[in-house]
Length: 125
Image: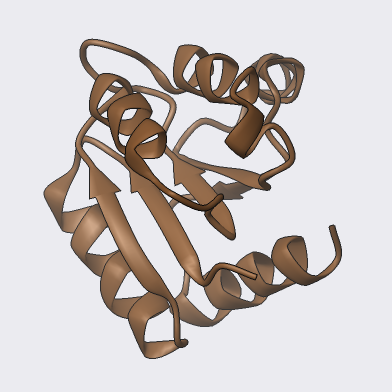
C-alpha cells in the first residue's frame, strides 16, 4: 500500500503544517496549491495515494470540482478523500460527500486529530 498523502490547499502555511505533521507520522507528502494543480499531480502519480486532503475554497478550481474530477480517475476512485476547511455548514458537507469526499476536518485542528483521522480513513477503507 502507498504511504503517499496528497494535500491540495491554497494556503502555503496549511500545506506546510499538514506536510510536517504527516511526514512525522511516516507519510510521504505531495502538495498542490489548488484543484488544477491537484488534478495534474494526481494524474502524474504511478500508484494511488493512501489518502487525499483538500480544502474547498481555492482559486482556479475549488475542492468540490477537484474531488469530482479525481473520483472519475481509475487510480483514485477508491482513495479516501478528507475535506479540510473552515466551513461547518451541513449543506457544504453534503455537497462534498456527493462529490466523493470520505470525511471532514474543520480548521483549526490539532496534529493528533489529523493523524488519527488520516490513519482511520486509510486503514478502515
